[in-house]
Image (cartoon, rainbow, N blue to C red; front, side, top):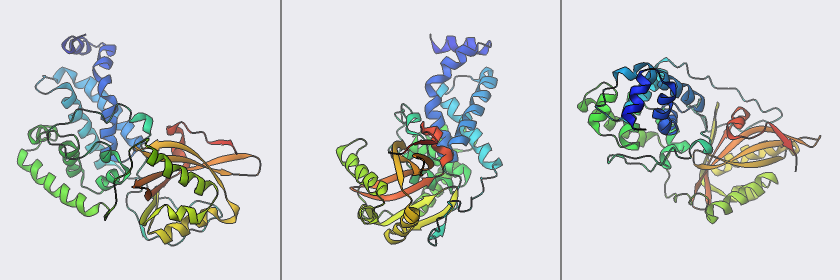
Length: 336
């Protein structure tokens, strides 16, 4: 059915027509909200608010921009509202019983970061990009990039995502955020400079191996073998010298192979052993981690997401076990 007919029916109160209009854009809009907010849960709330606003405002849609652009305008402003109103989730205290971690290198400020399940990315990042886009869609959903976005002021964040990630023109973005082209260009310049400063230096890091390639499979298999056997030496051999580890919503961050190795050794202490179940998050290899206990059951204790560079691991991010259901992972399983 033609879009004009669907719009007319939706304006008349036809919910099914509205769903047919908006359904093609839901996944990419959710990713947009996630980039803006850094939280999978907050992105879902923002998307629902976007749809409610669009349903209520459809009578005012004049067709001067495409429906997709109109929806991005609504989503961006709902996310800006959420950023302004949010009392960010507080950092959690260390809560792993029987484990004493080493002193962290520093305390991170983006403790509300959550992973984005790979199943929700399908069909969401192969979106039409404008000529202004500067980032590959896979890079722009990575944990490192999304984390760096979160330290930007809300309007700068919105402008950078709309311009450099999605490639909207400055005039389109100015309309979306109720501003001027000059103001948008100024905000973009400041955002780019701030992003450059806040993103971790990668030195001579090689790009990650292609998703699903034999090279990726090889390093993932080595990691699983080392982690499940608590082989610290084998694990350390996989890490870059400047490997970075974080664990939101706990603020502890570790930088460097030695301190990350000490942290992993503390997890493996007292005979603790784990089973790993593979998944993907933010386009990166991920694993549900399950602590083996004496009754033959392994209890889910968290999700690890790896950042790869060449044939090494340059970052590990640990999330708590509350995220496991988003990835279709059970709370517990039979030990192997």
